Image (cartoon, rainbow, N blue to C red; front, top):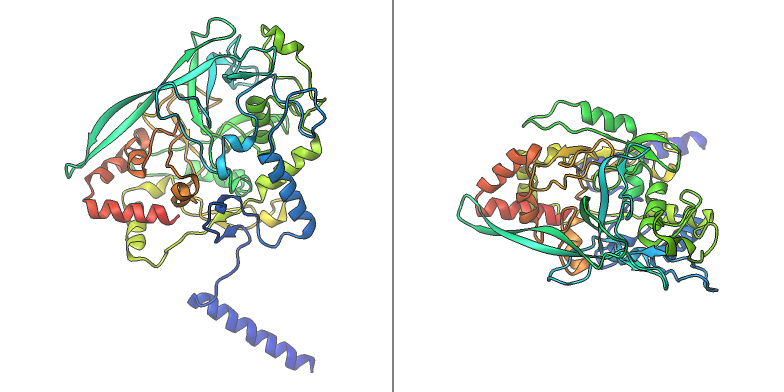
Length: 452
């Protein structure tokens, strides 16, 4: 009897393997979601047990919930004393990208401005401004003046493609007003919209060895690529960066704690001091919401949430234009940096993320993107012209989920065409090939990007 059952199992295994090879069976990937609604960026991994589902939704609650000013009896107490927004989701609506203000005088809702002065901090990162720190916090709790207002002023110019098609491009400059603590200049600034937050756990699970190998791999068109090495507050050591616009954060836990501290003024055991600078006396005397305001358990739940947000599946993969567009994407050189395939580490300690095949369209490396995108603000090993290759997965759902388009680190690009045309430096040859394409091929390339 056992021999007969063994033969049946072997036969079934052969049939399944053949079906997979022929494409008639789809392997369920727990980190992929086929949801295409406005909640597509917020879906959990499939197959989480009841306990893990509860952790995921506790983390999601913390991400979406508004914090309140101390003293209060609410569960989420400790907003400020200086802050930009009252909830994480304010800068990452629907877990997607934020946007830059459109009109002069419009307030920043999901955008902020990084600050520093020339030189390096004690950990070799950006040197904080002596009065305003590393980020402009526009808001303050009662009795604590906000640091000021930042306004985006757009400069426009028209770029003409090879076939005569005009494309209007815009570039932001930042103007400050209502400064609450005196002189700001001289200062280095960098405007940033909130990035999409799905798939972060998967990117953390890619091994350092793979990142180093990609950096060392010879590339055409003068493309190089390098890792950033940054101080990680969670492990208290220098590690390879992979998060942030300049790969300036090494771990997901550090990313969460730094965002809570810098954007909302919420302390944790990783960053236990309030976000007050030495000269901000009222800020330093403001009441605290606890010590720390974000408990280790809450930080654990947030980390679990971000680690297990699934990524949207590619759509319309059989469409002729998508197939043609993918080839164009590779032919003009986009896939050199926006790598279609990565693999998570086989020995990654969080087993649900180990040994997975990813399609993120990034190498997580720093590249010189030219003077047009430069912010002239170094960040650890990243120069003022270097940026991390942003992942493209899920990019095709941007408009349907957010009801607007905003691309690049500062949201200047309102279409995919605009985003491509801002590529310079190491990406210049790819950009030049793109602008020489006839309209039909540009449309096919866009259809491919919209399928991601």
